Every structure is written in C-alpha cells, then in structure tokens.
Length: 430
Figure 1 (cartoon, rainbow, N blue to C red):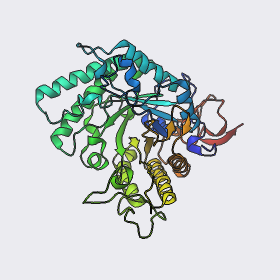
Figure 2 (figure 1 turned 90 degrees about the vertical axis):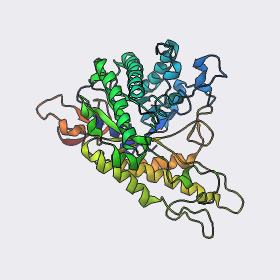
Figure 3 (figure 1 turned 180 degrees about the vertical axis):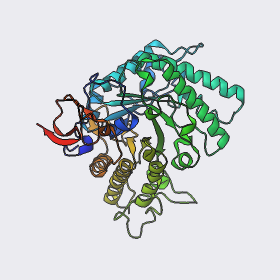
Figure 4 (figure 1 turned 180 degrees about the horizontal axis):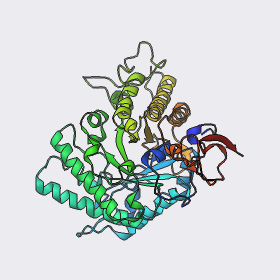
C-alpha cells in the first residue's frame, strides 16, 4: 500500500516500549487499520478425520501458518490480524485446554507480534458451544455457560497476561441472540463472564482491550438493542464493540437466483449494466454509510470504537452475456466503500479471508488472489478519514521527553519517520 496513506504510514510501536496503562481502545483503534482475518484456520473444528488435533489447522484450508505468511500480510499494508480460534473443542473433560494447542496458538500470535501487528484473539464458533445455545435460556444453562466461559478465558488470559496492548481479546464471534431481548440478556451475562475472567488474571490483562459482540454481530440489532453500559468493566475505556458486515446479501454472497430476488453482479455508482437483470437494487453506497453511521452514533461518538470483525464479498466469474469488467469494478467499489465509511464512522475494518482462491491472499504462493478486492481496500484506506479523538489529547507539555504521536493519535517511537505531533505541535522526523 502507498506510503503516503497516513492511516498506513508506519503506524507501529516498538514492542515493550510503552506500558499498557493509558492505552485506551480509542488510542489503539486507528493503528489497527486495516485488518485481515486468518480465517478457516485455528477455528476449524471438529475435523475428526484428522487424528491429531494440531492438524485441524489445515482441516478447512491446506496451508500451515508461518512467519512468512504473516510477513506477507504486513507487506500488503495490513496492520492487524484477527485470529479466529476454537478452544472448547481442544479441552479435556475438566475443560483444561490442550497444552500443544495453546502453544501453537501462541506461536502464531507471536508471528504477528514480531511484525508489530495488532492481534484480535477470539473464541470463534467452537462447535457452537455458546453461540448456538440461545434457544435454552434456563438459569441452569446460562450459569453453566458462564462457568465454561470463565474457565476457558482464565486459561487464555493467564497464558498471554504479559503481552502488551498489541494483543486484544474478543469473547465470542457471532452469538445467535437475534433481536430477542431475553437472548440479549443472556449474551450480556456471557460477555460479563468473559470480562471478569480476563480482568481477574491481573498483569497487563487489567487494562487489555477487550472486544464484545452485538447480537448476531448484526449492525441494526446491535444499534437498537445492545446496551454496552450494562457491562461492568473496571476499565471501561478498554472496551470495543464488534459487528460484521455482509451486505447486501444479493451482491456479497448469494449463489443463485431465487423466486424472491436475483443475484447482483453489479454494484455501485457507474457500475450497473444496461439491460442486465443482475444490477443491485438496494444496499449501495448510501445504505452502507447509513449502516455504519449507526455504529458511529451509538458507540464511536461515545469513545467506544467498533471492530468490523468480518466483511467480504465474493468475486464471481461472469456467465455468458454478462460484463466481467463491470463486475470486477463493482467488487473493488464495494471494498473501497465499506473500508472508507468504516474508518469515517470510527470502525476498524478487518476483511474476512480464508485462503480459498476467491479471497485476498493466497497463503501457499504468497500472492494476491483478488487484486480488485485488495485495490478497493487500499483506496478505502487512502480516502477514509479517522476524525475521533485519541492519545494526542494526553500530551504533557512540560516534559522534555514528551510522547510522540503520528497524525492518527498512535504513540510511536523516536525513530519514527514522517509527520509527528509532539507537545501539540506538528513536526517532521527525518
């Protein structure tokens, strides 16, 4: 990505140079843009055709994660990696997480940390032990799930308690709480159990950034029904919200025409094809902005940044009679629009990528599989403007060793090159 893009302009920290204290979610958020998922990898389960659970890493895709793969992600301009991970499926009868599995997860986290990337480590689906449990709202079931949540996250948090603010924890993935208030009440209890478990382990976990999920990670449900103030966190400035963005469905993932609607091959201003039955009929630029503005008003403007933990649209080979170039342009426009408006609305866009030949990065060859998507992300980052207050507000004008910030409010080291802010004044470090 272009070095001139301020959101990508060396927004990194020297590991261990600063303490966890004082690094709020709003401080860290712009430094994480853009992000990518290491999808279909550590969350793959159950893969019972593989006798060794460590091999489940290749159960849904065929490439073992390596330092070279993470390096390549960074070379493309990504500043954060979300690592979807299963844990419950890697426990014994006493809910002890298998040590070899924990070691492998830590190894991959360390690949990212070595590259000064931010990491979001979650409990992702995990055979649905909690995500699919919302049809049973009995007190017994909720209490049992809370205890499982605490047991798992206590172990995870203990293993990573000495890691600095580059590592974030996310309690769930896509909890199936829908738009049901009783289910959302149960969700709040599960997320409170997650917060309590992590904070109780001490160390850097006292101030670690924690990510909580809205019902179904659906933007409208989360905006209308989720009240983050119901969560009791001794470090409330260290919370982020998470939703996902897969819309409009007709364009991003619909695989065949239905009686109620057709697939949309073409999306966005200037990309419709005259006479085609497959132009988008809803969900274009203004709708994307409207959706993300809900997150801005509900959370970002109240100093709670929002993680767009997943967003993606499928690239398609056009059938005869359709326009491949217009589809390619549509895909690029979609990625640009979602990325750009996410940034403008106080959200961190993290593209969903699964090494399946239709996503962003081919991990085996270390090449880009879909340049249209990658170009869209690049342009979205270049045109997106983060306008939310961050660590620049905390500059101490009386200290000769005052902290240094880049233009996004991310604290940087003295060897940072480019435009910086020191004591509230812009200068150039050469």
